[in-house]
Every structure is written in structure tokens, then in C-alpha cells.
Image (cartoon, rainbow, N blue to C red; front, side, top):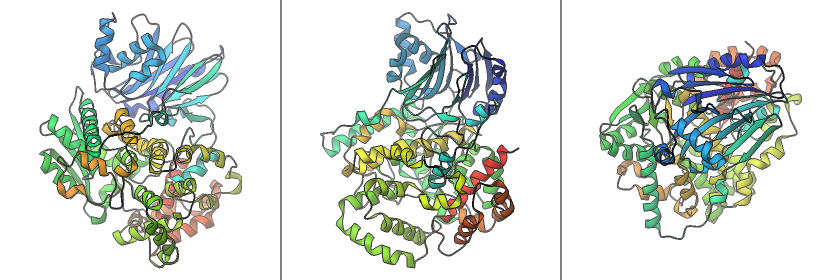
Length: 627
């Protein structure tokens, strides 16, 4: 797990920008605290900041060249089947200089070209430069676990693991209005967009080739093309799923340093930790607890699972003061605006965990594959249960009587009921978008000055809804969540927050075989009237403690409403959302922000608190960019 960056000049233009590679490298040095190296050739400069997990020797430092000095690679990620591929290549006469997976990736690419990507099991973002043809190849893993941004004009190409790595090169950048509009609705920036007009992302499952003739970016993988019907009984499906996930966990325990697990007390991390505990005696496990907020504290469930599996468990029990002590460091980790509030939890958990291990396994990805969110059950009920549609229509007239919020069990149920009521009679695509968003398009537009509202929005939005449009069922929704929510929210969160602390997170549910098999399981084996993730629970019913099997899912959330009234009040009113600053900034309408603040402090805040958090995270980023 590392940080990579590069600058390439095209068509023999001025090459002084290559010298800025040192600045790019330093900007993302936090991603790899074990080694920082750069190299420069006639028309390209490359950098690598290394977090050493496999082959920790200096010989495996990057940028790495092949023995003939024909290719140079910088690589971020892990290849879990590298030993098998290494043995195969050794028998074909390849002599390896290192024991690591990066060199295996390079040598496999030399032998098989782009077909090598189909054989890789792992997650990665990588760049390979072929010196004789002056071509640069970029690759991103199937589901976008690792990030890869790029800047391109007719004479310069720059790439980096983070936006700040490109910004450090000194190129001129402008705010992307389209990205801002999506951000205000989703609380993250989706697809190929970044917060800057000139910077894009290499999409998940894509490669790019850059040369003097320009850039070509093409897909090498599509989950949609892997979908088919599985004709097997429930028990057989559960057994195959169990075998696949057990292998995935075992693969991800391979490292030259100790490995631990995040253990939240939810089903997903409990399954991962339970499998890992069979392989590693006294497995280190880690969770957060909230001393002053019982509604948000799930540490007792994590501790129950830890006792069950006999792990060496660490609960980091925090007060509000402890949480806010880390707040400024958390804000520094924001590479571009990102407002999933649970990122603060992941940041603190990563920071605390790094004192014990360099690598942890997590349960990320299971909800999107197996239908773990409340919205997935709502979608199933709307499609399959006539009473839900009747109840939803009735709710339109009654749900608004009661206060809705995320800060209590009752308030959260009312909030969900209000959302369900608004969804019942909508077309599938519109219903999906409403469930994905924290703000409606109208609400987002009302916050913006007219000059920041773009007409590009609808055509891009349509691309984000392709899977729902092609598959009008729950599995279509789940596929859309993998492509939109998982790639652009959940995976961004764990990458950015863990790498800010030099910690590697591996997610067994993100193994492509687990995802492909999971997405071919009937939706009726995932969600029913009572629960989600049915088949996953069945597959591991003998592993999970009974008390956790049917426990209602809770998000990994923080007490935002309470903080906004107390601990963060001055940060909001006196800094990030202060009237004079907003008016001088010239992006947002202060009266709309004022109305939002008033709603957040009312007895019926709804999602206003999450929307304010999004504005805070944007303005924190904006202020940093002005200094």
C-alpha cells in the first residue's frame, strides 16, 4: 500500500516541469512512510512512497526497473496470487530480483501485456513506463479499491494517488461546477469527476495508454458482463459462498508483518474476524467505543465477538473531547471535499490501530453485494410487498407529524419512514437516486449562486443510473451501488483515512470471485421482509455468535447534531459557515445556509445535519486551497 505519482511531457515540449516530481512526492508521502524515492528520465519522472508489507527489504523499493532497464513501474496495492504467478514465470525463465508482488506484476505484464490484468487477484493502481516506445500504461483494479487521478493537456500528463499530488506540480486548476453539484447531493464526488475541472479519475476496471499521440482509456473489466443465473439450491449456494470468502480471507492474511482485523460488532467484520481467528491465534482486533453516546456505541457487540473468537481485542473508548482532539488532523486528511461523517471514525480507528499493526482486514463491500442497508430492504418491499406501497402512501400524510433525525432509534425510524413515503410511487431510476442522495437536486441548487449551477448535470447523472435502468430489480440496485456508492464513497473513505495514517486495509468481500458469485445470487436469497444479507448469515450461521445474527444494522456514525450544538458550534458559525466568509467566497447563498442551520437546531432536523457537514467539509477544503 503506497502512494504513486508521475509527470510525463509530450511532443518534446519544455521539460522543466519534470523537476516538480519531488513536490508531488512529498505531497503524498503520508501514504508510504517507509521509503520515498523518485526517478527521472528524458521525458518522464516517477515517484513512490512506500508502506512495506510484502518483501520489506530495500531491494523492493520503487520506482522499480526490470533487469534490462526496458520498463519502470510504480505500484500501489497488493497482488494476492503473486506467489503462484511468480512460480509460473520462474519456470518460464524469469529471474526475479525481489520477493515482492510488484516485480511479479511487471514481469507478467511484459509476458502477457494487457491480458495480465485478467489474471490478477488483488487491488491496485499502477503505472508502467516502456522506455523504447515512450508509452506510459496506467491500471486501476476491477472495483476501484485504489485511487488514481490524472491531469492531461496536449503537452503534459500528470498522475497521482491523490489530487494533492497533482496540485503540487503547480499546474493551473479551476473548480468543477458539475462535481460540486453532485457533491452537494451525494456528500461525495462520483465517477470520473474530481473537484477540479482539469483532473479526472481513471475509472475502476480501466487501463490507460499515454503517448505523444494522446491518451486512450478503455475498460478491461465489467461486472455487468459477468452476470448470469445460478441454478442451485440454497444450501449449495451458501456453501460455495462460504468457501469463496474463507479463501479470500486467507489470501489477505499473507504479509511479512502482523495482520489484524477491524471488528465493529456487525455481521460483516465479525465473519471476517471469525475466519481470520481460525488462522491466527490471538488475532489482534480493533474497535471504537463512544463513552458519552450510547446510541452510537456498538463496542459491546465487538467485544462479544472478540470473546467468542478469543482474539486479542482493543477497544478505543472515546469521549466527545477525544474525538474532537483528532478533528484538525482529520480535516488535513481531506484531499478533496468528502462528507461521509463516518470517515472521522475510520480516521481515528486507523490512527489508533497503527500503533499495533500495519495491516488490517475489514468487512467493507458486503452491504452492497448482499443487500445490507435499510434502503435495500425498502427497495425489495416496494417491489414485492403491496402492503408496503399502501403503508408508504399513508405515510405521506402522517410521517411529517413526528420529528425525524439520525440521533435516536425513534427519530431514525421516522426519518426512514418519511423517505419511504416519498419513494413509493416513483420510477425505479428516480427512486434509486433519491435513496442515494442526502439532498435533492432542488435543495442542492438552492445553496448555489446561479453562476455555479451547470447544465451538464443530467446527462452525467444518467450514466450513474445505468445498472438500475438495465436491471429493474434489487440486484440492479446492488450493482449500481457497487459502481456508484462503493467505489466513490466507501472505498474512498477507507483508502483516504487509512493511508493518512500509514495503515493498509484489506477487504475480503472485495475479492472479484466473491463479488461475481454474490451478484449472481437471487435477490430473494439476500433480502426478505424481515432482514437483509440472508444468504450471508446462513453461510456463516455456525461461526457468528447467535446474539449478532439478527441484530439490526447500525451505521458507523458520529453524533453530529450534538457536536453542532456544542463542540463544533464555533467552528461552524465563527469559521466555516460564517456569513461574511460565505458572502466573500461567492459560491453559496447564505440565506439558504441560514435556513439549513435553523432546521438542524430544530426538533425535526431530518438530514439537514448531514447537509451542513457536507458544507463544512467543502469549506474546510476551500480554505486550505486558498493558503
